[in-house]
Length: 228
Image 1 (cartoon, rainbow, N blue to C red):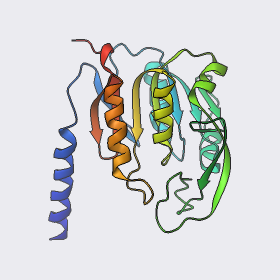
Image 2: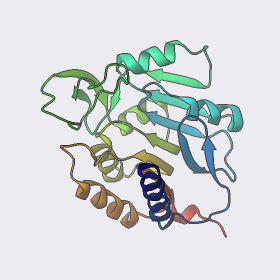
Image 3: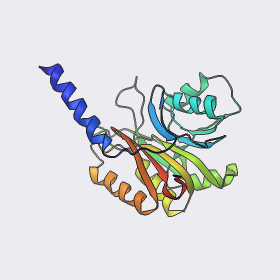
């Protein structure tokens, strides 16, 4: 039956993902609207840069509530702005209406395919998607210089296809970050699966361990920070 087929398919995905996941002290899946996995041992007052707010910032709010995190969120789109404006003011949440990129300038993004879902994308999701609009964008190094940060505890990016340029730029510029949570978008029509495999190889070469995978969400940590 269709139900059994979908259940089997889900089980296969789970088993495949488990091959990429390893047990580490303090590893925890933050079970909010979006389930993201981080290392929580010794995590106190972390500085978190979050690229892409969209319609959901529950992960970031949980980090504030549980670990007294300071969140710097970046999203220039109407969707992200609306989400932030609906929240009460917090001195732990700082919002900037810019996109993350590998340049300081203007980033062209495709308009949402689904207005209700609201995602502006760097990659082409489907069809031609010829309609674009420009948003101000910044490099993470530029933002860190302005905000006075020398390193990041957690870098979380869900930026609809721009993650490849951003990660390569961060690694090129030797930006220090302890953990990375990222959603890859090689399911987009314009992004080959090789783009993700190349980034995985580079992160490994640069000393980052992939310790958890759940479908398109990947979690990495700096190998030298791992404790027995």
